[in-house]
Image 1 (cartoon, rainbow, N blue to C red):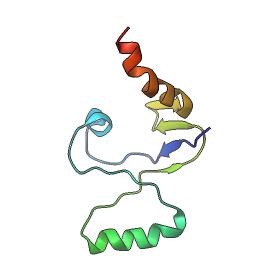
Image 2 (cartoon, rainbow, N blue to C red):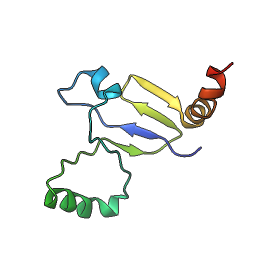
Image 3 (cartoon, rainbow, N blue to C red):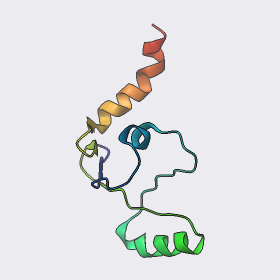
Length: 88
């Protein structure tokens, strides 16, 4: 597998549908090694950019709380075949 992603428990105030599928601007997801977390936090603070740790990279599936769990290879297959399948 390529490496999955597992979220931390969600404790925010945004509705679940808006959290998962919302199209608000300025959301960026990055992956960083634990060794760079202090530096990343300092940079975000210096630039006044909100920063939240939402999960960890591990396993072979994408797991978002108890709502979504899919194999990363299956997700890639759906992504690569979406347009050809829609054109049939």
